[in-house]
Image (cartoon, rainbow, N blue to C red; front, side, top):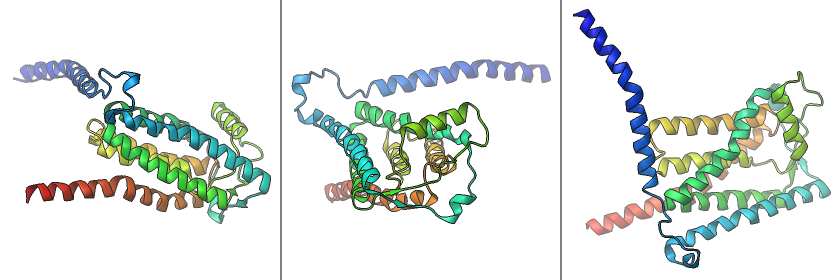
Length: 259
């Protein structure tokens, strides 16, 4: 009897990798079937079904405005944002990993939703356009910065080298509220709305990365804890306008249809 049980267990273990591969292939095929640009031609870009692509024009505007606001802050001066808790948080170069993952984290979500889940893409872009523009206005009227970069690293390794490169290309200005934090949670909010990325496993990853971004920005001394806290109302405003209001309107519309 025990031999039969052992044989069944071995057979199940042997079948598991094949089942996982099959599930992954099926998931990829399902995602590919939702490609939003079947038969797309550039001459048709003004069609209603493709007009959402013009939302991508926000990004060159934002990049130009952000670097301009940084120059303004450096030229005219800025307010140091810092608290006593920041001095108690030790420098930890290893947390630079979630910091650099932040870049593909939000960029890939923009590209994925733009390609496969357009309604979510529109909500995500509305969120980014509101929260990042709000941050730009704050930077314009209240330039902020910090002086928390360590004068010397406590040790030298590959991770401190990455941090050094970040320090060399970035300026410690326009930090409050933290755009790293607000954009990271924008990805979480968008993932909740998606068809293919809202499963429990995916959401654990999205929440983990967003939380790690909050931790990383203070431990590699790119932001004060105050910058992270200041991002919370910005996130809530973006959520209310880009995600909550459309969902409420959709519920009202469906309720009217059923009456």
